[in-house]
Image 1 (cartoon, each protein chain N blue to C red):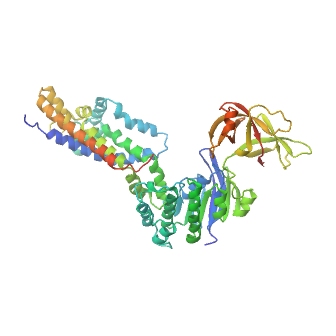
Image 2 (spheres, one colour; image 1 turned 90 degrees about the horizontal axis):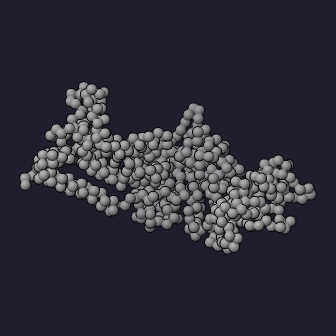
Image 3 (cartoon, helix red, strand yellow; image 1 turned 135 degrees about the horizontal axis):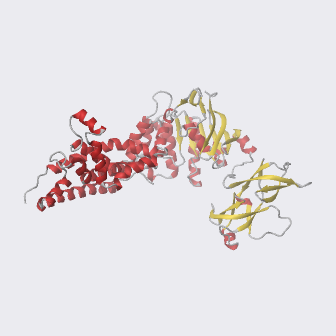
Length: 226
Length: 363
């Protein structure tokens, strides 16, 4: 059995990595805000962020596809800036994946930022630490577990996504053909050998990713007693 | 400096309770903030520290305005130079004892007088604890670390929020000398929240007495404590209920007052002469309340009122239980023996008679 074309695997890893970095940048302040706010709109935001957990990926993908079409304002804006369409592009996939994996980044972080971290921030202020200083010197180290869980879940969830990618990205080799789509393709064309090989790779990568989190959480104390 | 004061004027409702006071506290020595649970002591500390933002507040520390409505001034907590030591120490769990102390030392202002790191470690006797994880410390060790950590930031004002309340009495006795050292060696103006007369009379130069968010008294420690009939060794707020009533009548030629509480009436001895219709507060210690399941027949017992048992709870001593009663909707606690609870078959929902041996009156 020859090794199948692995370009889909690299594309998928790139997508998962970039998605996770983007999520970390936008998810951290969002989770912080949700943990601190007393706004009456908080449940509305929470429900909105949790939507990808319950919506069929095809529904999410359908709306994203419409938003990204060159006729919409987002898609049209993208075309005017980059000269390329957002739908069926790698950038479109990143946007889709970020939305699709949003709850996996925000929920563990929000949980970590609630509880003892709040009081620790007040304590830090009484020790002359500014809010930004206290965030990095107290809140982040006290929330290490939350960060590890959020990063790994977002990464792993993006690795396995299928529906959103298919709707938004189509199936363009080297650009939007991720591993799950490649596997689907192989099965459709009865190429079970390659489907087996790629599935096994994805299975092992996913398992090792999750194993690393659970081992980390076991070895590394939470530092937070609830 | 001795003339400087901390001025606090606020009238703000926080979740179901109003802090309504205007005081000028001398920035010298130790001022105890004293009062029962829920009187606003901790809220006041948080307003001073900037953790709670009183909507209508004015706080002036010496010649620095920390909070003012018009023109609006708000100094954020980390710029006030207030060291707030919490009940349980609140050490950072991700840092060692030394790490916690360094955290504070690194953020201390360069300028200004301050005690050396080594002096503070020695004064709080932390030399052997520096490598420890905060979770492995005893309650007293946590508090000493927390106090040292606050001192290391060179605070202009130290706020201690019931630093002994999480400790048992042996540990309290251990920590008290450190608080006295703190006062004599470091001379930082300190506000000390407590509801323990013993602590206050040992440490405080003056007392600010709070009740229901208002100033009930302010002055030198001995004066205030004696004015309120508080002597060391007795903890008036350990378990005291307040019943609100209206004076019904004063029996002629005697010192008995009939007081209406809800639809019930109770006769109590009082040397106050009060007009019928006067609103009155009865403060009743749980130890002065006993319970009968049938109406006692003796004519001499008039100091009783109908009540309903709400719940049975653990008391401080194992032989006793605290019985929470409802007297026409108002809460009254009684402490009685476990044996009496089972002999009388007291259960929540049962109608009983509360016998009140004594009460103090506030009109």
